Amino acid sequence: MKARLLLALMAVAAGGCTTLDDRTCPPDSKLTYESFGKGFFERECVWCHGGAKGQSARSFTTVESIRSQKERIFVNAAADNRAMPPGPDGPSDADRQRLAEWLACGAP
Image (cartoon, rainbow, N blue to C red; front, side, top):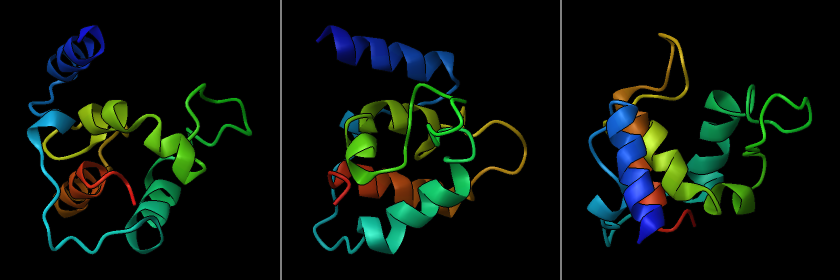
């Protein structure tokens, strides 16, 4: 309960408007780590969240590390949440929606 409240507060503070609990997995979702997640995180996240360079305590280099942090990732980068990645060249709206779907489906 406290963790969910904290995540919701983080979403508001980050300018986001939705949490992972607000989403359901579409029954026809075809997104997987191989078809979407891996490429998304390699392109948008690991330049800072790669772990090896010590740039961040949050590493997104494996599907397991992503799954363990999926709520935090959602409130910062998925759907209408835009705190991450910083800067003007972030993911497209379509990719943010796909990230939301993939995370809502459990990041398969």
